[in-house]
Structure formats: structure tokens, C-alpha cells
Amino acid sequence: MADVAPRMVFLGFGKYARTDKIYALEPIRGDERGGGRRTLVWVDGIVEPIVAARTERTILHEMGQDAAVGSRLLDDALAFAERIAEDAEKGRVDLGDLGRRARKLLEASAKPAEDEQLF
Image 1 (cartoon, rainbow, N blue to C red):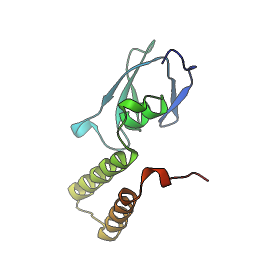
Image 2: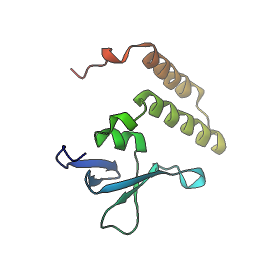
Image 3: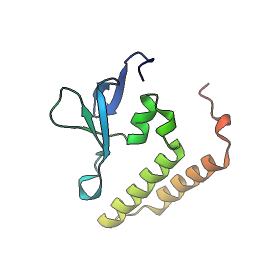
């Protein structure tokens, strides 16, 4: 990343970090994950990691590390699966909402990536 000027990366929860100061990303797993807690971000000069609301893949993408990043569709599918698991544990599953979200993910997977345009 030496040829790219440092810039700020949004971590969620109103937190940002400079790309040249981030040295490690650690996915949060198990009971610690949830409530928007997705990734621990280790930043040079800060003793404790920053809790990010974004996945490590999303943060890597924002940092310009596309070779290390999976697809956005995979991130969306994992977030969807996490929501289903959390809602099922709480005993409140909205099948209508889950059906709409699943349909949206399936539709996104059927389209070629080149068709995605911002404007």
C-alpha cells in the first residue's frame, strides 16, 4: 500500500481509522459478535483494538486490498445468516421479512457483477 496515499476508513459506530495505521483485523466470533460488533481493528498507537461494525472484508475493500476481499454478496449473505440465527435464538422470526431478504440476495447472485452501477 506504499503507493497509495493514506486515507480514512469508516469502521462503523462513528469511528474512522487511517489506512496506513491499521495493521491487523480480527473477526469477532461467538457470543462476542452481534449488536453490530463485527471486527476488531488493531491500529498503530492505540493499545486496545477498536470494535468495528463492519466486516473485515468490507474494511479491507475500503483500504484498497481487493485481492484479499471476498464478494459483497458473501458479506450480505453472512449478515443475513447471522440475523436469522439471532432472531431464532430470541424466538422472533419474521418469515415475511426473511423471505424478502433471501429473495433480494438470490436476485443479486443471479446478476453479473458488471451490471452493478451507482448512477
